[in-house]
Image (cartoon, rainbow, N blue to C red; front, side, top):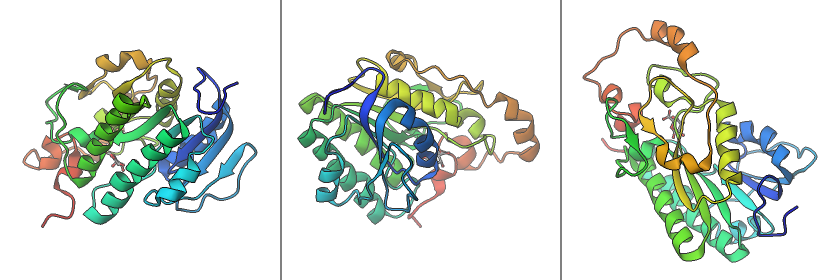
Length: 274
Ligand code: 15L
């Protein structure tokens, strides 16, 4: 059993899950309770009723005092909260930049030593679909959302270098029940593999500051995780069984469309720019 602020290898006294009412938050809510005594859940959206072992703590990321209170007594954080698609600058600024700063400041003040940060494939969305990239290559964000996630990767690196807070940044691909289109044959991350990835990040003895691409074991792949092998994430699912159905649904691709050329898909041409 851990003491407050220290990290155990396999079991936590209290884990915090932010963004717990979102798509991936709802998935992890029912899974992370197996790894802790208490799962503290936060969001600004409705969280429903607390199940045994859960604590509900609604909080706005941009509210520094609320974030300070939220991180008190927490062993580790799984941070899914924030603005999760391309969009206007103001909400991205509030949630993903100011909010993330508030989260790390609260972690520093309370001595929280590990964060799993939901970054995104959109940090590197302007690499082409005929390139395979690794986590040492420069970022190429495909919009303001991608830029905000790149900020998060840099902010968390600074909090590791200055304050020793370890972070695993998950560059999540497309985590859904199943891949919806041809692009997702490369970017798909099953929910079970998402759990494996988060748990590997939480429980690896030493992670420092690590960037890892969040994808399943897909045959088509644009991401090479060899420099994140120390995290010990081993995907067990694959988009391959879905390929015939996806191909049938999307038999033709317009290769003059930037969404088909670049890894970020439609995000490369979506957003606030006219
Ligand atoms: C993301 O970062 C989004 O949060 C998610 O909604 C998906 O669109 C995903 O990327 C993707 O690229 O498919």
